[in-house]
Length: 485
Ligand code: NAP
Ligand code: MG
Image (cartoon, rainbow, N blue to C red; front, side, top):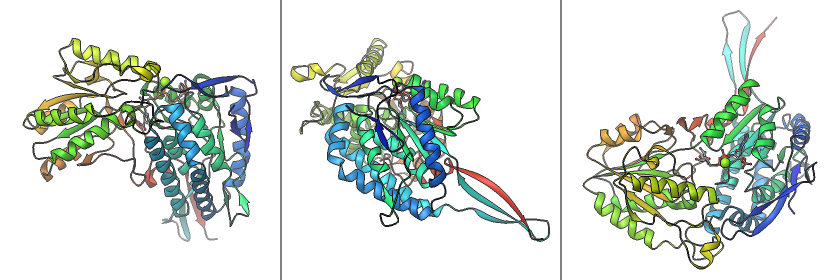
């Protein structure tokens, strides 16, 4: 049985209760984990507060070294971590390994930034007096993580939190705690100063258990000074409300319905390949996925035929098997949701080009499989046009000119990612300017670049992760006046 990580120790829940984590590809039990309680969160806060006293005083250089060593320790167990991630999440081993690579890259990025946090010197009007702006860590942070990318989305919180000198408590999604626990156990073991010092016990903690208990305590406990939440817009609203009562700092990375706009002058072959990756990677369970495809009418037929051909060849199966290119959906609920969205689109006149049903037969019947799906002639009032589609189905819209595409793209309540595919600078600039999204990519999709800030507008969230920008959310700004008397 797996255990939680609190204060540098692997422990059971105070209640001694546990629950099972199951494999979405087979329904088999992968392992059991402690069912954390509010008292477990209190324990973790005690440990994180203690660790913070020491860690906040460590030198920025030491923080960078510790994060780099944490990367080495994670890599040492990457084979085991990838297997756990595939078994608990459903993604393919290839996708799991890529996720670990992203986690490590992100931690390395913040390791480099730890010693580059700067304040400023400010001349003031009073004689012999000057001001300084200094940046300080906040204290105990809480990170609430979803199940689609349990490791990278844990890393986007742990990296900047530690680089800035904070301690952190991670609450993984109930269904994906296992790979996270191994990674965090390794991170907690990190050493620095040529191995002479260790990360204070409790600098990183993991409390497993339900969002309604463990997550709720992180939100409402005033000793947790900042919450980084990634998940659904629905829970995000609640997070902000509860944290608001505490005047607690919050960042929200929520859902999206990213448009991909392909113009008549695009490199169509490249765009077709990227539409496949952008929609069907991780079985379509990506916040930053291509969720609505806009095709210029002159290239639409050729595009749809070629994409359908790629998708017909995509092998759906257990992520542990070498030949699998797309695993199951993570939960039965997610599969029912996508089924209902596709049925709704069909009932409103949409045409299924390919897929539109479960992948069945043999071992596939044991998991939550769904075929890669393409929908055309999709009306704008269909659920797939208005809601986030968190699975392998892609609605396609034909357009005559860019203004029309942008107007429809912006009609979504979401504004996370977006892309335009064109060789025209005029088109590209217009899209960069007008698309309502936290991110716009030209002839590219986001590969989770750590170098660039990432986040959403409108219902997609508040604040940014990645980039030096993310560090701002883990630092307090203090204004100082010094008079020479
Ligand atoms: P979710 O239901 O919002 O869950 C996310 C996390 O919040 C889980 O750890 C969950 O714990 C926890 N939680 C649930 N109720 C809570 C509460 N009352 N208080 C505190 N925490 C609570 O989201 P999901 O269904 O797992 O994930 C899919 C959604 O996340 C999609 O909408 C997707 O677009 C979005 N997402 C966004 C990004 C981004 O960066 N913008 C990245 C990935 C995913 P339990 O598992 O225990 O319920
Ligand atoms: Mg949920």
